[in-house]
Length: 152
Image (tube, rainbow, N blue to C red):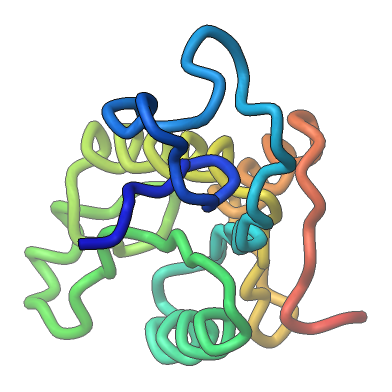
């Protein structure tokens, strides 16, 4: 059986230190640490949920580029009765949830922005709605870089 290795530098533990996780049990490991893999960038997708296909495409493209993707957790239903649509309208946009739920989702999405390293705005056809505009303002206020799917 191989001798246990130091979790910091990767070298075998010397006799008497095998029970510890790293060299220098009475202090820090005196050896240089092993190189750590770079942490992937976290990107938060923002935009109108009416652009479901673009959210899916951007999620795929960002993931394939090695980024961790945070996205919306809810997409508005595409086909409902007129009466049902009216019941769930908020900010003039049929999103399929109550006004209270929409507010909670907006807060949650801003918390995702807080976790992210950057924001990607899915401004399909140049469209940026009220919620997305609020998310962009939040990202800028908290120092997050903002990228746009479509440039002017």
